[in-house]
Picture 1 (cartoon, helix red, strand yellow):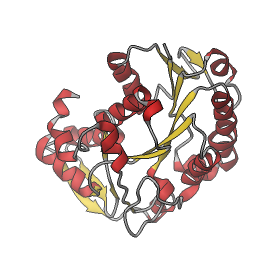
Picture 2: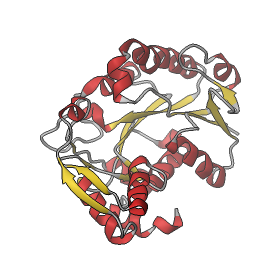
Picture 3: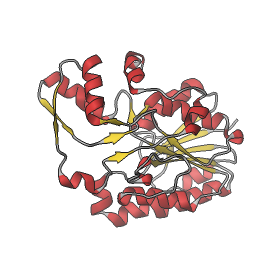
Picture 4: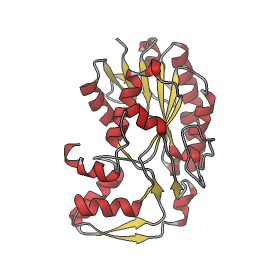
Length: 282
């Protein structure tokens, strides 16, 4: 039976995915990272162990990267080495062995779109991080052992923004919400189920690139209002302009859609409203 390796298993999505796949999949699930994981990998300089222990038809869910905008901007050589040079060399060796790679990309590879971007829309990356993700995507176009999941903003228990809202809900301090920030937010459960279904149905999937997104574009203000109505009822917030440099590395609006994602899930995409209703079950 194929093994599943989660590279970046200590991060928010990686840790949740490990728990999800352990429940839902009969395969052996192994964590991959620099410290305390089943398999050691340091993308900066050492990924030999994972190359050695993987076999044809195993899966590597590639979630690891340097994503912080300040590091990508202030340490571009390090970020490029990890996110592009080492990542491409690493994936090439896996693909040659017949290992199947699910590479986590980002909706920011579409940059500013006047209309909605679909799974097959041309890339127009905005900022250093997105340009690096797009370079990896372009390197492996047509490779049958590599597929790309472009995450929009993922919302689920433990994500950065809902954790921040929970803290302000407790303290009573006023949360400043940036105006103009809009994404097709995707539920954590949809992401987990989507990756699981890709692994289960790999040989029947005709696509290489897929947008992991929610059903509609929604602002940070709307997100906060919905959570304040249902979950964080003591929160106090106000809408403020974002610092000018905040938009240097991210577009204000990224509107992405995907027919492929709903087909992969076999159902409609989870709305934020439904996600909030299911909050106690997460």
